[in-house]
Length: 275
Image 1: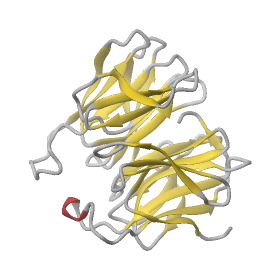
Image 2 (image 1 turned 180 degrees about the horizontal axis):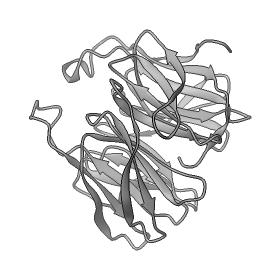
Image 3 (image 1 turned 45 degrees about the vertical axis):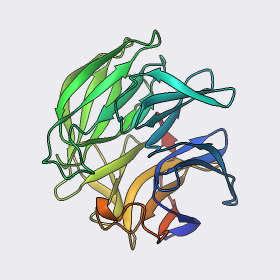
Image 4 (image 1 turned 180 degrees about the vertical axis):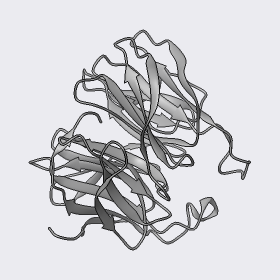
């Protein structure tokens, strides 16, 4: 593909695409569903919850974890129960190779129109304990962990940057640094590729951008609606799946028009890291 193709349509607002066990998973915020797509684009709803199913990832034993308005939920034998960090409306999630679960929160009531405040990143360790590992992050969004498990990259949507941390086996984050300044870019969901680049989705600029460390732009995919998140997958890991939808602000969420799509783009390098 030299341009995007529509892989799926009819979503309310797709977020958190993940490639897992040969399938594409997407959270539809409006429908309250976690969807699983086969390679032809046919879908089934794996989970349904009340509220916004922000993000999904998996523990090493295969159990899915889902952020929700009630905290982090774990699916076990088809049942969703509290896993850790309950009572906080977490945003994005990523699980590292040690089953440390990283979640973030924006730090203010976006839906209620509150003035922006910095958010934080927390970790839930395998014993269920939760602690804050990064603060003063401006609208933390997508997160990714490098293949070697030593670096966590975070999208700061309001900071217009990608921020990196050294990642320790116990889930501690240190050596905070700017991985890339993005100019007018507003990064939302992100993913890593095998060349060490990051793809980030951008809602207001209606694009998905591939950048190297330092901020050099390697590729740009322009679309006709806001790009909320992206994930590399497919048989060879080189299909960039983009969740995109018309965006008119938070007051438009849940409207009658289901403009959400999953777009597919032929990427130059395969996926890497987590998720």
